[in-house]
Image (cartoon, rainbow, N blue to C red; front, side, top):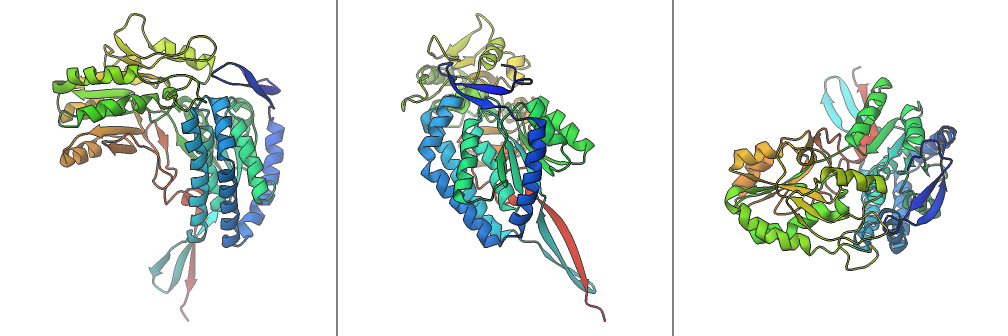
Amino acid sequence: MPFEHATEHRILNPATEEVIATIAASTAADVDAAVVRATGAQRAWAAAAPADRARLLRRFANAVDDHVEELAHLEVSEAGHTIGNARWEAGNVRDLLDYAAGGVERLTGLQIPVAGGINFTLLEPLGVIGVIAPWNFPMPIAAWGTAPALAAGNAVILKPAETTPLTALRLAELALEAGLPEGLFQVLPGAGAVVGDALVEHPGVAKIVFTGSTRIGKKIMSKCADRVKRVTLELGGKSPNIIFADSDIEAAAAATPMSFLDNAGQDCCARTRILVQRSVYDRFLELLTPAVESVVVGDPADEKTQMGPLISRSQLERVRSYVPEGGRAIRGSAPQGPGFWFAPTVLTDAAPGSDVAMEEVFGPVAVILPFDDEQDAVRLANATPYGLSGSIWTRDVGRALRVGGAVAAGNLSVNSHSSVRHSTPFGGYKQSGLGRELGPDALTAFTETKNIFISTEA
């Protein structure tokens, strides 16, 4: 659905294609006004006592906690996430706010020994931060930038994706109910080419945090470069799932389907390149087939559902374009009729250099490829332009360390598919992004370092 010239956006339920809301589209003039409000609110916020800022952020976290179920059902209806995932996502927003609040009074500089005086550094807020959030995880990823930015003393203007603005708008209401100052955290729904561009180009916005495609990320990076504007980018991925012959093959096969089917594969960390050591390849396929076929795809509001729909008609067509007619594959099932459904698919005859094996499909589609040894596995794992995440399955700790050190990715798991925790850093190598989010250093990414020297010489 084109949004560039729309004055309002129709929000669809991707499981039913029904219109669930109509949202007014913000304009460039709205961005100008929001920046003025944010600038004033930020100055007062930065001047407030750190303990008071921390207390208000914890109140915000508590407000989110009180509304987890409401937020989760909004996420189900606008994004098609399974209800279990949506509850986790709302809880993750709460946890991020609480974790960031704990950093407010610990955001300290350094005292550096120098000759002839005392030298110390201060970490000062940047000002107004523009957060451009994606549609695949609307709530948590919006909070990845918002929570630490607020904690560091900044104001935030959040632009949610056109298809998924409802949870962001509700979070802004909860922030005000919790006592955050007017103008400190604002949400502007609208087209990326209008609101997003206006935020990137506005001289009053000190930094942009963007999560989305590598193609759009490059454009934003270029515009920020022209203005020497700070930017954090979390972009695409084509992550490997490396299974060695010495691993627990049964456990690896059982865990593999949801490593690329979570959120219907609309996940930058999805392990869509399944690399299996040749000596156990056939056995792994035998185990993987029933595991994929048994994944429950259906109504995302049903507690038993493991995978919901894709976000839109255009995304469905994109995913279809990567799957050749008549190709050999392991296939699950998906509902027929209304909704943007695509069955879980593992292509077993894809060439290592094919588009589906190299490009981010962003759907429930993976390829499976054999490898011979560690060197071959690393070569295949690093053969794409991306480097966001990945998994290594082995019982050999030495091998896990060697391969983990050799795979060019920002977030790796051994005998697990976990990628994201609010307390650990997250970000990519190569064209998967720039900078890090989350973890103990998240607040410093929204600060400027000031060095002060005081002479003690008579």
